[in-house]
Image 1 (cartoon, rainbow, N blue to C red):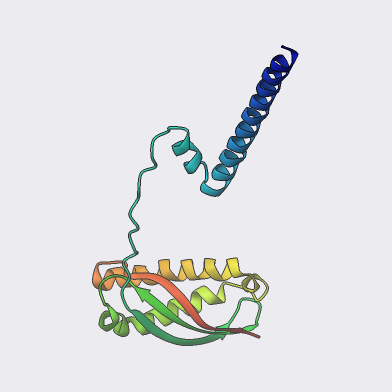
Image 2 (cartoon, rainbow, N blue to C red):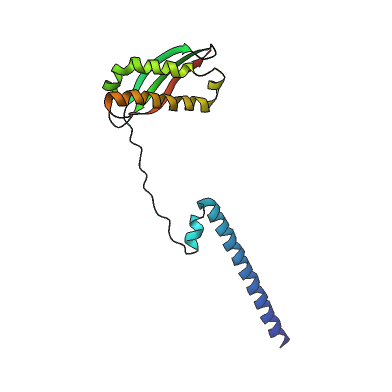
Length: 161
């Protein structure tokens, strides 16, 4: 009789140990899923609703227009030489932008001349300059074509001395 009681006790202890291991494995699995999937896998595993699928929509971009090179002085007397290309919108406006190149060059010189050498050393300043150029260029292009068509500027050369 003592042996049957001992066997029953071992079975209950073993069952508790197995249940504890299962819980630990489940907790670890949930933590890994939450970390790897941002909580998506854990919410699906726990019976939450499935995440909605969002379709990737590529940005609409048109051709790239080579604007050329500009050399001018910065506000502190340093020299800058910049070559850039414009990312045009969906519609190809290269033919419409070409006659505006003298106006756009003047705008670029004015915008560049407002900066100092030290200011333009940072990447953030170059991005801010590009945003300002896009805004100012699109004002002229909008008057001529009715649309803001420059969506991005790529520096192909950026030398300061």
